[in-house]
Length: 122
Image (cartoon, rainbow, N blue to C red):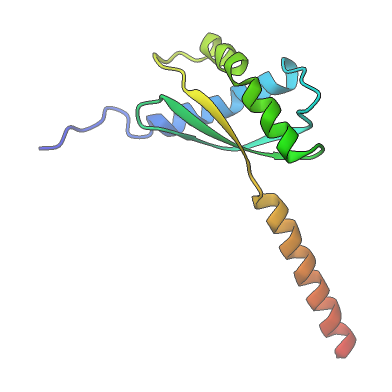
């Protein structure tokens, strides 16, 4: 019989808490000028909680510079999480720029253009 986990949604809860705490830490504590207005979109935590992939988007700023700034501050942010989270292992953070919102905006622009073209033709 396979071992049943005591809390099957635990990794989702941990990821959710990391997302909330990281958003606050980046906004309040991080002073790196390369990091613009960051929004944490999602967190993927490995089953052993050793690593967390942090997907973010930007309202302002350069994605490459922001990624470098966030990854440079990963240890500082992890230390901040260590003080806030009540788990045995705080994951090592890996920041990845998430182009989903960028792609969605491009797709919306294409749809609007197609609708406008069709309206002209009718």
